Length: 40
Image 1 (spheres, helix red, strand yellow):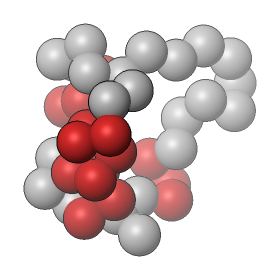
Image 2 (cartoon, helix red, strand yellow):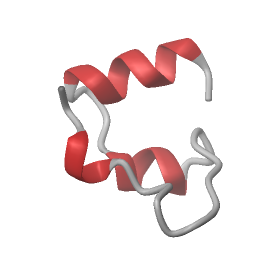
Image 3 (tube, helix red, strand yellow):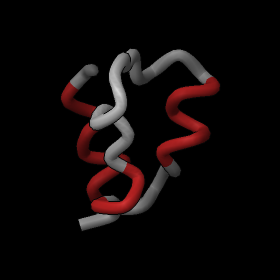
């Protein structure tokens, strides 16, 4: 993911589901969902 996307996720400006839906986050696997840890 792009650095600006990570900053937006970490600060709560964008939600995990929204980022995934918009294609800003690409993930695979059972442990790829970081929504429980965001925002920091």
